[in-house]
Image (cartoon, rainbow, N blue to C red; front, side, top):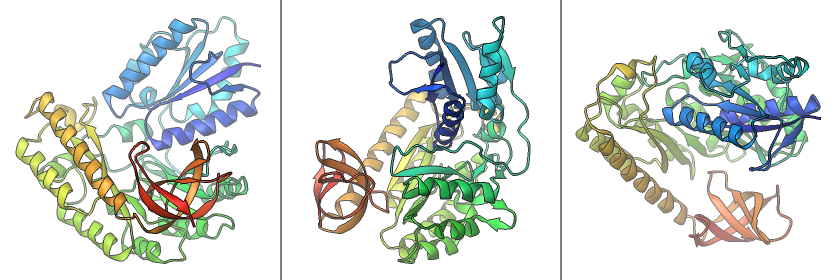
Length: 433
């Protein structure tokens, strides 16, 4: 029996796909290695190409694997191979190179490679086809209380900074029957929360079912307690989603992650985003007014080439004054093949780092303020894992991390009264009611 170890870079979608790839190898008779420092016969790297740093880390990992075990076979798969094939082919030590479609046939490639003792590097990276798709190896092992459910892939928006349309192709939706079959399977395995994932999930459309229609189908699954929406473009949803979230009987949780990228209209235009700051703010304010206790997160890119100090100051002020509760801050990364790669920088990188640091500090401050306002409140927490002896960690519907003492609380939804903020775990702490 050959052993295989997976390494995943990048987004939630990549991690979801790694679970499917791992399941396909387990079904094919491979033993899966999960320990961090353990050796394996095959190392599978599900790569990311959104930033230069992601590609750099991928190359560093390959060198590290070869240093520790020169006989290990390495599979480099995913976005790096798909969007920058020539660069990926030049990486020493890679035995099999697969694109974002071919990686789901990983078991077949490894079987063929193992049969041929004289095998040289295998390269199979084709253009991503249009149309709906299916997932044939859903993860079935219960490792957490919530699980990612892939519903969509690719993007049609072509923002000026983004390589994703080249790495994952145009927007396409998962076959609705295939999707619902996996959702029912996951719930039957014990998962209580589904997290809908993809690249641009608000564009979901298959067999006459749009995103809101999909939510309605998922809500009918018996045994499912929560439906969480991962990052979603604000221009792809409307008030009907907020109305559904506001319903006290809805399974859709009161949490949205809406990518902003910049709080300045000039930079948004240069980024080729599809909204203005006013439109974004208007939607978030409606969300806060319509959905009780909603949590709103966002993404921000710092150091876009045309961004000046004054532009950044507007973004900082926008985020400070907006109802957004936290933000992920990403330094701009040049990706060859995008429009933004041709724009000259107006500020230096050292300045960009200061901007990023100030935004991360602001995010931490807003996040903590959002947390502590729930001290003294009662919340339903879906408990996940034991972080210390009889100390369990879980999440509220609006994505607040909460700790509670007790025994055997994994995968239980418990009523918790919040007592204080725990600095060690950067979470709220409470007691069972």
